[in-house]
Image 1 (spheres, one colour):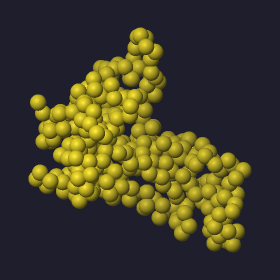
Image 2 (image 1 turned 90 degrees about the horizontal axis):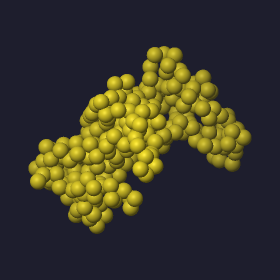
Image 3 (image 1 turned 45 degrees about the vertical axis):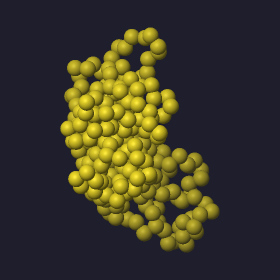
Length: 282
């Protein structure tokens, strides 16, 4: 339903729950990507922490629950990060709980750093969005190329359009979503339900996110290679419109905050009741 309505999926995943083992957690994490009903866009990894006053605390005190040691947890998180698809961003790798409140379990607030260090030692890496962002680096238009990751979910065909540097740095991306169709009708009942509730989405492809990295500039300032000011967002939207048209969609819809309406209007979108919509085929 969320994908059919153009939303991002942001999941929280917690290893070391009651009954889990590092092996079962590895298998569970793999299911996030093998199961087409999941495949999140963003992810937070929150290892289970024992906090006083919880039922899990009582089980730990009774010897019925054992938290992972750091020697178990760091390689587990490293293995998980190494399998994350390029279309997903791992936003956090440890819950922001004061160390004094954690009575058992890891207190390593720099768990992401430790996991990345282990991957480097093993000549592996994480290709999630956060690990590839160019951030404040200067980027020229001739330095980037368009890379496309395609994957299916249970209701959509997704295209992750990304402008990347030769080294794999991510300057900007767009999430383009095609409802899976059976002729002129949606192939999934969830999509049909969304189209019935939100008529302006019926038969439309969707932009679920556009993001360009790099520092913003003051009004009137000249760009010195900041990715934000290479027109990558405009180019990504034009690419999405062309791809939607090639796939047979006549319209392209996006959720827009008030602050970005003018931006989308400049790209040819018009305000609907809940979404902004542009025509793909003219």
